[in-house]
Each structure stands twice: as C-alpha cells, then as structure tokens.
Image (tube, rainbow, N blue to C red; front, top):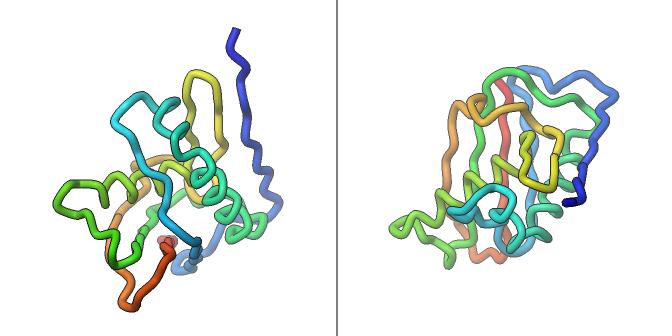
Length: 142
C-alpha cells in the first residue's frame, strides 16, 4: 500500500484583494516540470518544489487562495534562458503547479495562491536584467 502524503495549509484570513501582488525570490532555479505523470514530475525537484510552496505560504500570510483570475510572471537568471528548447515553459508551469492544488499517486497538496490552472489568465517568462543567481515569481490577483 502506498502512503499518502498530505500538504496542509489552513488559511485564517480572507483572500487577497483585486490588484494586490505578491513576490517570491529564491536562489537557484524553480522546480522543473517533467513530461511524465504528476507524481513523478516533482520527485526529481522535490526540494525546489517544497521550498517554493513554503515561501508561497509565507507570502500569502495566512490568506485563503484567490478564486479569480491570476497573472504570473517568472523571471529566471539570465544564463538560464532556455526558451528555444521549451524549458522556460516547463519551469513556468511547474511554478504554477507548485502553488495550486495538485495530486499524484501518493500525495495531495492543498492550493496556496489559487485553486486551478484555469485561473491563470497570464503566464509570462522573462529574464532578470542584472546578473542574478535567483529566480523571482510575481503574482497579481485580479
């Protein structure tokens, strides 16, 4: 029998207001999406996935997930531009999946920022202007 791992976030405040933004900056690269089933998708990058979720919880400051449209901008370190290979898209969608409800064969994660992928009205990937060894995620609600 497979053990089910549950990631629980219990918000105690109302969701963010329309127009509000949160930003998260972390060293290195975001978790990378793999083109395999979701359960295996995050295993190789589980530490990055978990770190991003922890910082998203902190940025939400106890607020409930947002139910409306959300815009996400991901800024990668300049030397990590992989737009021609599609890798930037894999990073971007993995960031989204880190902050919404997701599940696999042996885990379930509650939503942090919003509930569903369909709430993502805009998903942009860019590069930091200056030499940077970190990535940034900016989320705008509404």
